[in-house]
Image (cartoon, rainbow, N blue to C red; front, side, top):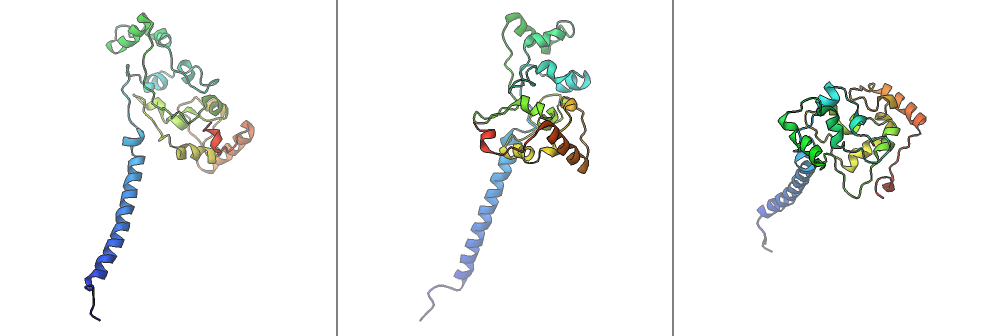
Length: 218
């Protein structure tokens, strides 16, 4: 019986199959890279705000405690955005004619809140409580990054569920003494010392490794 297909058909079929696998793998990797990139997660992206507020200047150089502006962070799920009156406590006395602060002065005169753009905005289906994390020894910089070094505020993490679960699976790697929660320059012990400290704090603060869906999705 004569051969129906040319011998090169075997090579072409193998090339097609292997090529399809390679292409699908490359496509999957490309989609993953896009999903993890700042272009999609908005990580490290500086938001355009009505006033170019600098955490580096206020929290870093001046040493203003986080709780001075974020007054509800220890008792509420929301850290709180400072009202204009808080800004004017200082800026009615200093930098009173600075052009960049005119929106603040206008807000105070007109009794109209500034429209700040949230940097760490979670989806509606995610529940997050600042107060419980603070009470359990999770520092501001654990989630917000080196905030006291940011001239303009940016998102330090991806805010993906996997990013949150890194801490929820092994809280001992991230906990610190409650006295250091609001210290933007806190340096955790390295390696085994942090694990030892973390396990001690887990017992002292009654921290659980919560990973059930209902913990964050209610």
